[in-house]
Length: 174
Length: 172
Image 1 (cartoon, each protein chain N blue to C red):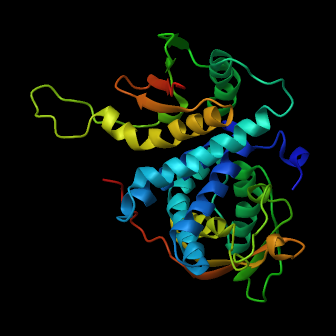
Image 2: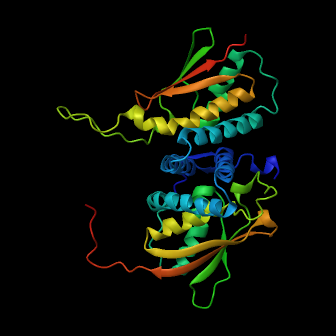
Image 3: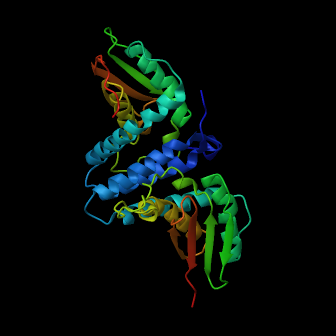
């Protein structure tokens, strides 16, 4: 895997922190901050997938299990330089959890009073959702465990909604 | 969490690029406050926090010139992967920092101007303007935190080179 250019993580971590802080003061409630973070993540995700495809040199995903694995092992490693484990599959292989023990985004973070409901890392859900949507996999994504709120790990629940089939003939780019 | 834990940690550069694109996009689509003000506030805070971390183990920087040199070399080096190429000053509180290949703008694509066509697409410096608010604010935040009150403006007429002008507020 091509490592790409890497930068000091502090810069991105602090920039993200300042953004969340700004949103908390700009928007009227924590719920809309969570929603906005997810939307921003989505917009990032739909661009980020291009870089993933260009740089990761991974082959086509065989099934949703394979997809989850690649998000956790290759995706998180490539962009945030950390990795997640995939766990808690349901019986039909349509739902799983990505477990993050080490999350650089929250390095300097403590939730202040009044923000207990803030899903600080919600941007990651949006990123995963946006990126997968661009490769025809529609998922629902949300945090069910959050270390900032006292859990022992970050757990992101990933739920496969539909898997768009690619139909032949493939449409060429104009 | 502890400082040592995050020290030396790295991320993909594209994370920051994507975040900064989205920041500009989001604040431009809001029609309440002027977009620049919020991005300014974000950058200012980041600059202050970063410089505090970088300078915690070093002696106090005295003169304005020392502070500016620190920004040009170490701070710039860490943020943008290279040092400032050229530093000029009028010795009366204005410094011009020239970066001949500014990291934040290398991926900005500008429509080529075709001969004979009326210029309809925005020029490079107009396009770059929104994306320069954040770096300018980071630099201003850093300088302020080191005791140099100033304004920072950027001019990107000759991409990918970019001039940053720091004007120090004179004490009366």
